[in-house]
Length: 139
Image 1 (cartoon, rainbow, N blue to C red):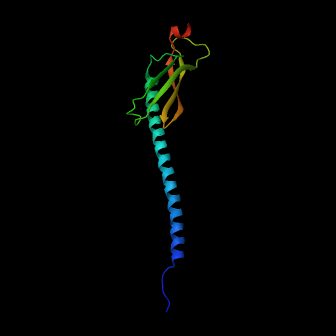
Image 2 (cartoon, rainbow, N blue to C red):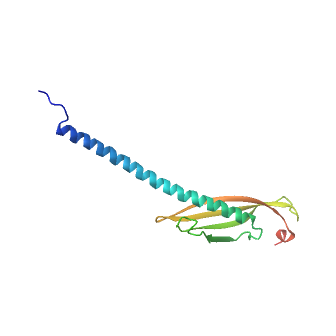
Image 3 (cartoon, one colour):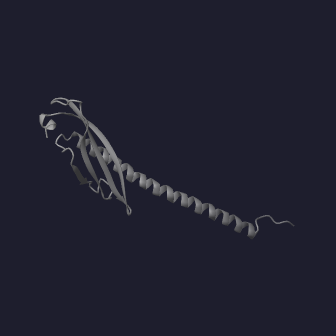
């Protein structure tokens, strides 16, 4: 009489193969979750950076040539520490500038945040037009 079913060896081999597959899937899942968290942090910093550069470009009192820095509210950063550094410079002037002419200013904004033990950064640039005043031409 012939018995049907699996031998103990076949069950052990199948269990070993399943264990290896499960470990591989869990490892890939762990990497995916870490990458998603990192991208969420980056996206949050990008949105705050865009809002900050818009705010600074609209501020007509922003001093040219000086470096200004600040920090983001940790609640906006998802509990992380983060901040920014900005500098505004003349980018392009007319060949013979006169009061009332338009020039182009360039805003350089460096965004930073601390993720884990690493400090991460990225840069944004923005431009705005500026109407020249007499004091801009004769420092």
